[in-house]
Image 1 (cartoon, rainbow, N blue to C red):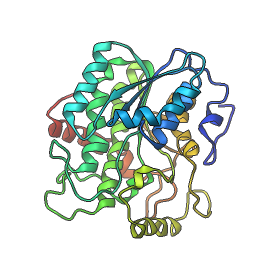
Image 2 (cartoon, rainbow, N blue to C red):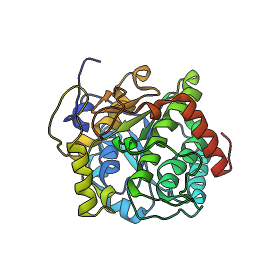
Image 3 (cartoon, rainbow, N blue to C red):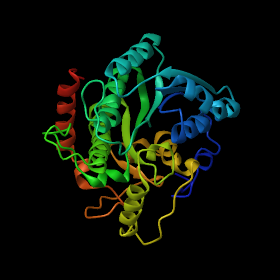
Image 4 (cartoon, helix red, strand yellow):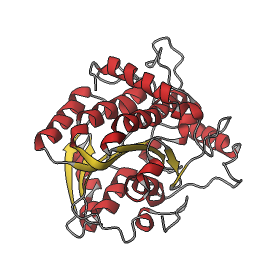
Length: 320
């Protein structure tokens, strides 16, 4: 790569000079925050963006900047998708498959963080069911639309460092629910999904990667109390980032969405395939306490990824 990007890079900087005319890209969660910015940056460079959202009325209003920025033939199409309902996920996937139009990139951006204990309409713990299983079914069902050279970007988080997946009790049926433990499980699952999806599809020229957008103040944190947020910031402050030290700073939304478009469009496929990226680079494996710097080894464990895939198929009642 001729350009080096980092934590402060924005979507416009990463995509500077990139022509996406004729490219078709699916972005989930386009009703706010990172999803809207990701869609805007792509449509502004000529991409046909299919934006998925649970609340289409909200998404229609939120994506006005996307339509305003669209250039060089760029467009935005909205589709209904409620990741907390497999009926909705399957309906969305079936509609896309029936259209028969290929995708160059899928950015699995939507998610929830640290809500009170609850379950999806299918009986899964809310975060695992929404963040992981909903995208698991969606991406696998539309996999035939991914042409050679396509990429899947799974939005994970440094929050994966809170917890590995629990394949024995993914829904907290034995009790002991803690919002950030559940969030950590779901975000680890997002990384492991990318590892296994990449393994299964790379011979066909389709690659998958996971990304951490960084700390951004968006609607994702709407379930967090001030006490929870302060506890999170205290944990970050006690951490030492890989490769140096530095005070934590929030990213802007364009900075937060930069790693998604970098991994999906700009970075070499072989560099990011099956890996975890942060700050527009491939992250190092860093075990130990704290939320800053790197990816825990359990999130990239290929055997763990295969086991999660099998458990996920069992839970959703489909084999891929």
